[in-house]
Image 1 (cartoon, rainbow, N blue to C red):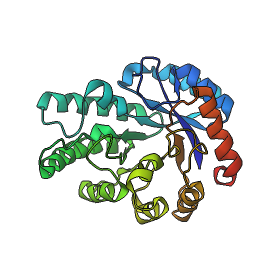
Image 2: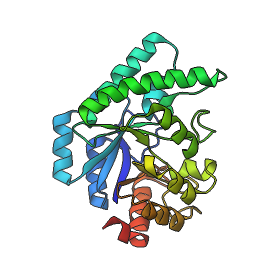
Image 3: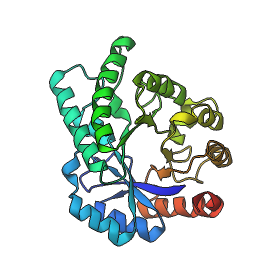
Image 4: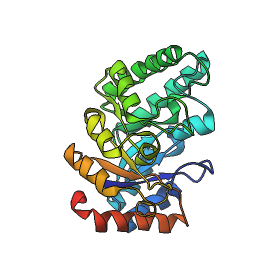
Length: 272
């Protein structure tokens, strides 16, 4: 497995779930702490310059683990299940641009809350809207060699696709090889019956994993059963990214260091 940390530009919203802000500075810090990569949380793909990003990554021997789209929903209110034609066109363009960026950096684009809510509507309508957009962006992603990773998110943040079983059921309807799943153990702790069993039951779709403890602080700072999580990931043969998407508590540097120290010291054999 490889270890990554979520970062964003300085202009990211105050409530963005990232550890560090400022792309260049964050990459330098991530390397110094011993991370293998960074996850980029972006509102727009032009927040980063590709030449500079490649230079910063190269100088610090890091990779982009994935591009996260949460701020597209939070800051721009764009989402897959929107019925407004103009908004859908803007979202499609944004995702195509993210996919183009990911084709050079990481080859993965996250779909978290950007899938959108049900919000009192008929669920069949919501699924049709989601599937329509999913197929369109999957077409573009397939041409660019990029996978789209759908993240189940807990009921307190959105009311559509809350656990891994629901996500797998929807992915069966999407039925695209490059449209897979991104479990986040923080959300799983709220929504899934047993974290380890849910990983194993839905193993065919697991492509990328977010780590946080039960309080959304650094792994090891809560009461998450990390033995169960790592044993399940080992059982399903997972060798991909585990990315810290945590609150920067008590401060970003401390949170990022606690994550590295805990995971590499306690579960270092998984990261070799």
